[in-house]
Amino acid sequence: MQINILEYLSKTVERVPQRTAVIDGDKTITFIDLNRKSKIVAHEIIQSIGSINKPIAVFLPKSIDCVISDIAITYSGNAYMNLDVKLPVVRIRNILELVQPVAIISNKSFVDTIRLIDVSVKLILIDEIDYTQNPEDKLINITLTKVIDSDPLCIINTSGSTGTPKGVVLNHKSFIDFSEWAIETLKIKDDEIVGSLSPLVFDIYSFELCMLMAKGSTIVLLPSSLAAFPAKLLSIMCERKVSFIFWVPTIMVNIANMNLLSKLKLPDLRTIWFAGEVFPTKQFKYWKNHLAETRFVNLYGPIEITLDCTYYIVEKDLKDDEPIPIGFPCRNTGILILNEQNQIAKINEEGELCVRGTSLAMGYYNNPEKTAAAFVQNPLNTSYPEIIYRTGDIVYLNNIGEIIFKGRKDSLIKHLGYRIELSEIEHIIINTLNLVENGCVTYNFAKKEITLFYEASKELSIAEIKKAVGEVLPKYMVPTVYHKMDELPRNTNGKIDRLKLNNLVNNE
Image (cartoon, rainbow, N blue to C red; front, side):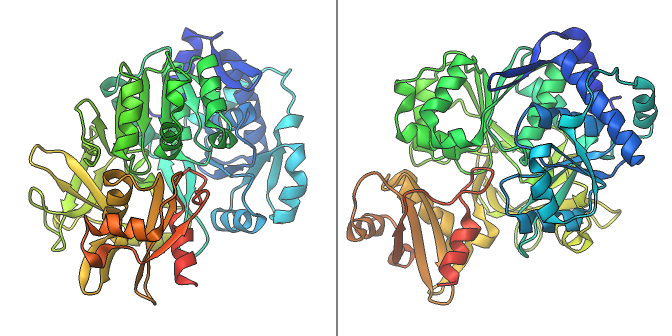
């Protein structure tokens, strides 16, 4: 039985020692060198810290050094927590004060920034490590014998309602479980070249590390800044012969809207996974039509569920206004669709998607109140303790057993006495009517106004949009306020920043 995610890496290093593990611009590192350097840094951590199962922050840009640091922290028996170096100092300070890591790994160029953060914590500068020494396996092996599969592997921060992110704690067991399922069910090959675009603070990046360790995948680090230059992004992918991507759909929508796949071919791209938000069907079909031999997989799951809990291999033809199903439960994952009476919803009855099983996060670090509110006793089980996670997402099961995503529980509003799902309005405007390329619908509770923020390349008057929407939706669902933007605000993970737009509307 596998206990530690590093057991993958030791076998991969034996099998393909000289294969390139990471490509970072014009820099590369082989598996044997990555493993050796990670152990040297791990030895430094063990001697400096002398503890296990503690959080260690990584304050570095997405780079080979960051990959070394994350693996080194795992070798030291501790949990890595990657930080976004572009975040405001106040937000970083809030994260560190909540999680209280025992050390920060960074480099000399960020020392002044860390001093501004003003936290008393051990600082390890990775660019001052002596890599000419030989790693001492004995000390590392003794440390790793104390780690079990339910111990934390990483902490990933997600936005919190109070302004301080919540640190989601994920363990070895849940990553091993997901990786084993994904390798078997979704046929991850031994020679994948991964186009890694997700920020290192996102769970997709952590899974890419699992692919690197488990299958010897080569990770091509694609700077997040390339999202603004999709033609350059595709050119690099073609040059590096990228075969696998796991992206949030936003950048893929932009590529479709710019018709770039007609000009820039991706002959090596065999597998595309997407997750994190709804992929508009029209733009998805553009990708599928241009990459007919590529396998597309829609995955769903909030960060509290270790990557994802449902999946759908998109093989059938879909209409432009037909949503892509989120599909079926991943192996060893229990999906409960609970109605307002906390009973299992019937076929075609909407309910909240809840999850049970190994995939669940351990909770929020140093935050027992929020943990207790989100990770709760299964209401269907009164016989013994069984924790489920309530996602807040509304779904239903269709007649052929597919799970269909409807929207957020907190995006359901009452307007003029009607119960309205804001995501339905978005779907009609973006997918059915193709009026705009991207959009986000919010609600001003004080003024009782439905507001549309949108990006559009073609010029349409507000009257034209209202008329088109009014021909499909009832009058009470037609937005009354419109804001055209050159680009909608995005979170670090590439999703539209709904919270920011919602706050903008409700603080007018």
